[in-house]
Amino acid sequence: MQAEEAGQASVLILGLLLVVLLLVSVMAGATAVNLEARKLLSAADGAASAAAQAAEQGPDGPTPRVSGDQVRAQAQEYLTVSGAHSRFGDLSVSRAWVSDAGETAHVELAAVVDLPLVSVILPARVPISVESHARVSLNR
Image 1: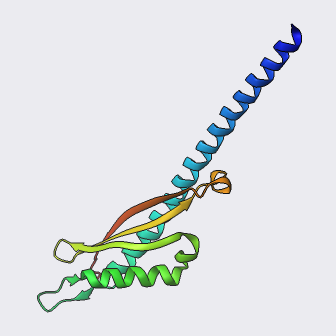
Image 2: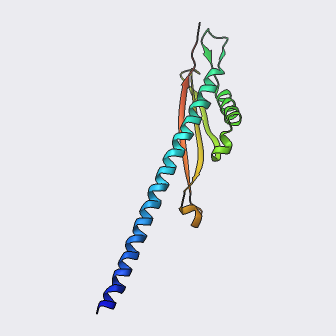
């Protein structure tokens, strides 16, 4: 009778161990996605700031303006110069636009995160995207 109970205890322990390992891998994956999203947001902040700093004074007034094409070009240049492409998988500027008559530059970046632990067994990749904006400022 005790040999049967020992076998049942082993199955129960193995089952609980499997559940704990699954929970640990889910927590590690969620943490990795969160950290990568924060890093990507930092890169988006830099790209939006670089785009806003590239504003030019327009012929219609003293306030500098930036165009959507300038925002995209400056964001891509910032990502290249900062080496962001080597830090993120499949990094791209998914959208770049302006608002407030060219006074605010908006940048949306997209990348892919490989999940730790799970990606060893399965090709688990999670797409992430972040958005940042920066206002053009006039210093006198």
